Length: 418
Ligand code: ADP
Image 1 (spheres, helix red, strand yellow):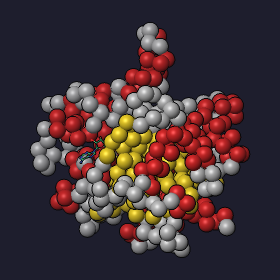
Image 2: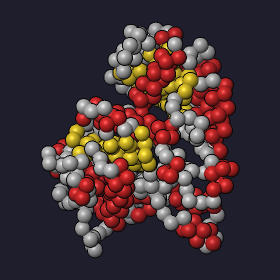
Image 3: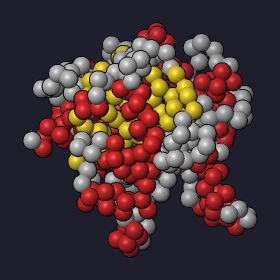
Image 4: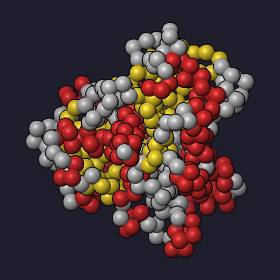
């Protein structure tokens, strides 16, 4: 790619009271510095900052809004003792993570007034995220008035899904009036690992059928044919699909009515299904973390968690539930894709948890995917094929890098403009 030698791109991920930033050098695609301002708008705002290769620092700051928070971050980026920039003018563009682009955006876009209006319109679908993401854009317009902003949407990559995959079988008017449909999330990560898989397999993405499993605190799977999403496990919101850290994933929707009739309020049910379910809800240790769950399960070294399990403790059962649900999706997607070249594992669990991967892959023999136990055990946070040589569907661990994907998309958009 024709990167100009000194160009830098800033990536912003703004939450309602936080602002995460990462600065990249386009010449090397290397990360130069990163940080986060937390508790924006309160008296206890603080800034965490780290230059690549240097220790982290933390300080209390005054940040009554996102603009002030960003200005403080920029001070660190340009200060002689902590900085990585001579001047802010080196920043040639800002890429923003925007959670929901609804049906407006199937690609990243240069931010204009019209784009901001559309992002605002999607707030109905992501009330906690989109308004906060926009705050980040507005902050950049204040601090970098001459610099282009690019919006990169979590939902955009999934917009290629066909109508029969994204429609829910509920009265059609809810789609017509409210755009209730499947959108899918983690699109930036699914796209990044799909491209990385194509590079690794030395085949064009257009010739590949992939099943990408992004497994972190939130988890989703996507079926990708020729670089286009055919289906994905999250929906209107990030609640359905896989069993997650604290989210329930797929359940019978009547459970909601049942609990409401038992006297729970909508907000209580919402909280229970989003914050108290998933691994947290069933593993018996009050933690949504896979590492804690694996520790509590007290697994033997070669335990593939693929037995009937009459004597399982709750933690062991929770990992089996997780693997069972994941394999169910992989099998379904394999069928819909008409076969698959590879299943990709990414996110905190996918990249690092050998026991969770083993439990999933032990259920994939019917699709020709067999685990190389030694390679699996040796793989944490690095790209590696963990399937046996004779596997007809590869299992590959690929570390995701959503920020780098945002940088690449931002660069593509700003250079396409000229
Ligand atoms: P988020 O979705 O919030 O970005 P992450 O992608 O960091 O989350 O994933 C968090 C999950 O990854 C947790 O369940 C955690 O236990 C798991 N995880 C992270 N590191 C490891 C590790 N070294 N071994 C096993 N599991 C890990």
